[in-house]
Image (cartoon, rainbow, N blue to C red):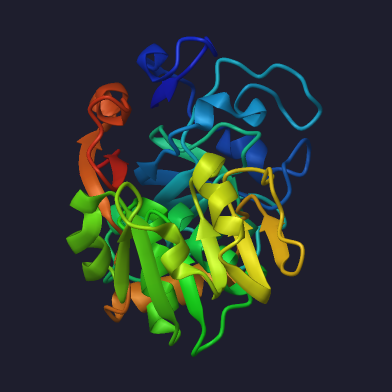
Amino acid sequence: MKAIIVTDRTAGIPGMRLVDRPDPDVARLASLDGASYGDVVVEVHASGFTGNELDWPSTWTDREGRDRSPTIPGHEVAGVVTALSYGAAGLAVGQRVFGLADWTRDGSLAEYAVVEARNLAPLPGDVDFVTGAGVAMTGLTAWQGLFEHGRLTAGQTVLVHGAAGAVGSMAAQLARDAGAYVVGTGRASHRLAALDFGANEFLDLENDDLDDAAGVDLVFDVFGGDIGRRSVALVRPGGTFVTVAGPPEVRPTDARSVDFVVVSDRAQLTEIAHRVRTGRVRPHIGRVAELADAASALDPATRAPGKTVIRIRP
């Protein structure tokens, strides 16, 4: 199979190479001897990539800390199940699926990927594979930040940083759909996009006073750093500060603070897919590129705003 591999941690995205790799050993997967219980083989049709993946320790080591390079990056996947191992529940051969591949195993920038069945959900027939790959990570991150960790409910106010970005735009839409009032932030050039993706109002982080948003029930932070530090004080007493940018340097004294890493969840993926197919939310996909062009398409210097999706098959 064709696959993108990385071998040098210091080379970054320019170090990605397209090579031939062995197809997954379906016969071994289906046997009881040495089977990885609960795995499925996915014929990948579209894949997503998170910008800082090559900095993650899990990209280079397995769960026991052993080196596993060369490694196939990309953990957002949409495709078709072609084989099942013992214990793979809830899916069938020939089924369209989407979800997240495990962080410590080879990913989805390849023609085939081996994924734990529990990390995948059915992809409705009227949702295309590019959309499925584009919404898996962004949708789950937004969902878990807002509802699982942020405990957002109708009538509350949420400040969503980067509301025109890949994750922020999903958070803005899901929050608005849930009946919350959404204050989006970003650069001035992102104002119209943020409002289009569901923000009720917009704050320009370079020119507006962030303190104007003080007293919100929830802050959803994707930036960290100085913006994250300044945003902690915006949460009302009893509210919640949620971040995906790592442990915050400052925590509120009279509110909750949560930093989290997204995990795949079939039930949540199903809820997100329902909202996509009914038009209630849509992923912000900035560019779709072919596998051979993955390195150039994913290069931060040339990457388009929004999520870049790599199409593996037509």
